[in-house]
Image (cartoon, rainbow, N blue to C red; front, side):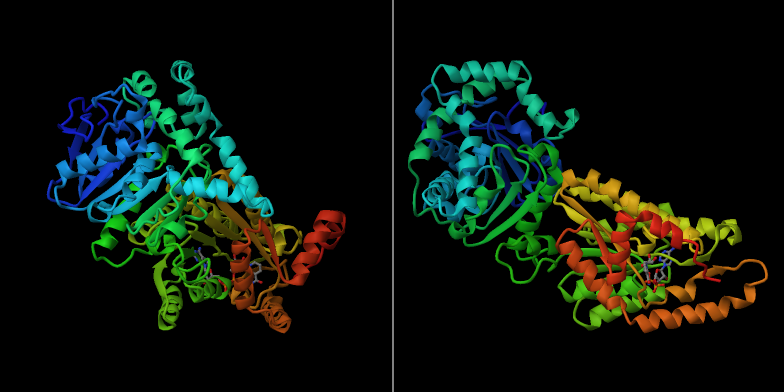
Length: 590
Ligand code: NAD
């Protein structure tokens, strides 16, 4: 796509600059205009266009000074107002009399904010999705407003940090020095280095073959705008057009907190935080295309998509309102209670269980209480089935925000008393199920880019060895360690992971627990099971309490959450006096 060498047409801007415009998709569909920043050209959008062109008339253009557009000489020709003129000219040419939707990045986005200050903007722009390019006026107000109030130290420091992050702009504003710096940065691969450092695979880096010339020519945008924007800004730049912010949380140039006050200026605002660096059009084209599509559809009259509702700034509700939560083993006990708890807090829940009827019961109960739930039959030990399930859930409902790997089975018996199949089955379900769930969903969460949370239900048995629970303790200890490793890996993607370690929760777990008795003691199994059930009941700790612990641990992003005081106590002992637990490991169940 980047090799589309010939522009489809040229448009003349107000000052006579010729702008090269490229169009794809059905001409009678709603128009989406893509606007790039520095040092990019229209090829920045190569990965986004195919995701939009089926549904939309997609228009992109080379900014002045770039690609096939003309290269005005004076610095003043690179003021934001000139870029806004270019946008106006393009829109008049490609969608005469029709409002367009806009997706813009970096300086391209700053230019659209500039355009939105014009009185006619509300008639020409139906929506604006802004990526890493705040309004110069809002930024001015944010920086100076906070620097003037040192008694609010957090905001003061953040404003200072943003100024520091813009220091390169000051260098690029120095006449004579700017071209030298830009040439050196491109020739020495510094720019490419920045993209690679942001985790963008080389194959996804899209630059025009004339990057060096484009970058040098259009770097005048810094000289034309940086200092003027620093010293003055409009105080009445209010926006009536619906705006969606894509906030790249790892952007080193535009820090996420500059958008803290945007809601004061924009009456209809959505915000999605994306764990990406500055060039998310290259790293996360799917997210950008989906965000635009959902907003356009909604403004066109469709109900607001759950993800869009979740992104709406100022929406009522709590942290889990409109979140999508997937829970395995949700037909009973802790899983079922967790599904009900998340649903009561406004989440849409995907309920799965090996017992499909039980999953349906849980889902029906959620629906009867006014919630939204979907039931699936799933054996978590079947890796292929879990992968298919994840594919289906993501296609039908979206990528879950929270994945709870809860399904598990009990098993009691010493190692030498336990048949191999039984021992293996516990590992397949308790460890394999968690691993399968993480493998299927973690990658999708990372690729989506907007963070999320995984909950792996282990047990107090993870850190309390017992000879009579050999397979169970082993499976749960493995879940614990697996989760510790995975948490570290997922952290960079903004995905949290909590390991839940309950003690004795009164559920159906004992009913399905296999007891492997030593020779000659098989007759004691039923009695012992009944005894343990009584003990669990007497402890009077219901799954609803465990569910509340899980939900609050997700909210607080806790790495480990023992559930019940004894689980905390044993956790402490396991860290301080592990030998004490090794000594008590000899306790027998049968
Ligand atoms: P439960 O028996 O009430 O519920 C477990 C659910 O998992 C059941 O609905 C069952 O059908 C389902 N399940 C079993 N095997 C499955 C499979 N292969 N695929 C999909 N679903 C499957 O038990 P619970 O107490 O709610 O247990 C939930 C989790 O909590 C388990 O991982 C368990 O090990 C853990 N846990 C429970 C306790 C406790 O005291 N109850 C303590 C520590 C940890």
